[in-house]
Image (cartoon, rainbow, N blue to C red):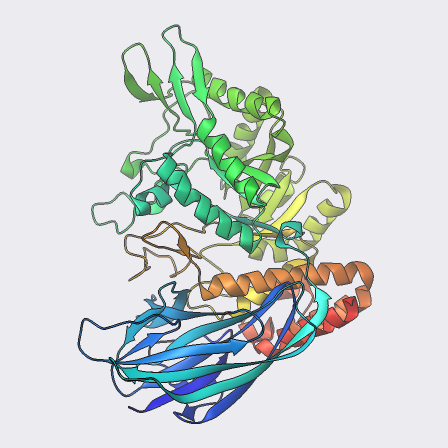
Amino acid sequence: MNICFAAADRIFKPVSDMNPEFAGGYVKDAGSESTTTLFAVRNSTAAFQLLIRADEDYILTVDDKPYFSQHGQKPQLRLGAVCDLPVKMNIVDMNIAEDGRCYGDALLSSPSVEIAAGQTRSVYVEIEAKKDAAPGIHDFSVGLYLHRMLEPETKIGALEGSIEVSPYILHDVRENKFHLDLWQHPSNLARKAETPLWSDAHFAVIDRYLKSLGELGQKAVTIVASDAPWSGQGCGGSDSQANMYEYGIISAKKKADGRLECDYTAMQRYIDIAAKYGIDREISVYGLCNVWSQAENGFVKPAEDYPDGLRIRYLDEKDGCYKYMDCAADIEGYIVGLEQYFVRTGQIDRVRLAADEPGDIELYRRILTRLHEIAPAFKFKAAINHSEFIGEFGEEVYDFAPFISGMTKEYKALKGYQATMPGKRFLYYICCGPQFPNNFITSPLVESDYMPVLASAAGFDGMLRWSYNIWPDHPREDSRYSFWRTGDTHIVYPQPDGSPLLTLRWKEFRRGIELYEMLEELKAKDPAAAGEAYAMVMKTTDIEAVGRAEKPEDMYESDINAYINMERFIAGKLI
């Protein structure tokens, strides 16, 4: 059996038709060795990828447990890491993208995978530098051990390397300034885990996903307060390959005497679980402002006397039937009741009634006016993809999240708002676009490093993205759906045990957020040095010019060493 292996940077994007030579020429035949050098600040990690190709079908294993194939007596290749720092290895799974090629994305929790002959696969190797890790150089090695069935293993090669650990200690993720707002879709979790909505089993799954979000640095809780506020994101046709409907987390019923009674237990349980993982800076409420319509699939406006198309389901105790509120009085009673609940429980200052991409200025103004009249304690937030809304609603919307192109185009106006309205929060967002920078499955992973750096350079508080965990029918096999780029709908994948499967994109985005944190600390200490740091990875620090970039190389450095050198530079300045 002939085996080739190669070291690759952590941002290497495995592709189905790649050759190991793409890893920078570090291809080594079995029996030889290669080296790699890493850098990490304390309370963080360093990583690289190990690429492997064999000329026979084989079993790839990254732990010490036995594995026998049900498809014959295949040889088994085991990877074993040795280091005085903790090491974790994950086999990278491949997923088909819109161009028909398969790209590496998910970090498999399964330690053993059967690999076809001639296929190049990647293993993500991550080394942890804990807070108390000794600064200095730490050596490591990853050995390759081969055997077949009951034969003894033979060591056939190794990758040797070292990691430089900086004395600088990064603060805990709970203390991040970066305001990360990835929308959660809890109804989709129930579907994939096959649990009843808002049941104990569903909340056990929710807990696992919120934990992973907390580890990434999430700061906002997503509360869906009415049914299908996005009208299912285009699903609903007979040939739909996804169920993307979200359902309200608040249960309502109308008593026999006409009084409206709402149960906020499930909502508060969700908020409390999020807080357990440090997700407690904002409560974003969707479904009460700028609800999307889709008449062709039955999503029309239930109440003609209310400006928005809210779908609020309730139990009518008079006849025992479930209905949707079809008059303004009931809808307003529901909204006021929620406002008063947040006031009564001392949470109102963290609550934002959120609108997703309002497109009609006059309609949005009527909706805001009505909400201001009936529930004045609420503050508003909007993800805006029409730059003209920035000027129209600069004073009325408390938290702004313009699409990245609007952010760059209206940058001066936004900075003006920041100067005169210091209490407001300013983010930028990405979704179905732009082509770059983004974190699609096909996007260069380095863009996940660049985007938080861009937020820091712009003086913004963080980033928003519409989806963390909403998937088409079979996302692990094929995550293509409708017109969306693959990966746009999710950053993690579902597993049978109800826990999220992390991805290369998740890992690199976290690193980008860590760079933001270090840059913000450096800006406060030494603004001139921060300017030097930005220039190490940004082709231009003129934010308006960023929006005019015609190709990625006009916007950012694509070599990961630029980002590592920036991290090393910042750490040195902060020690």
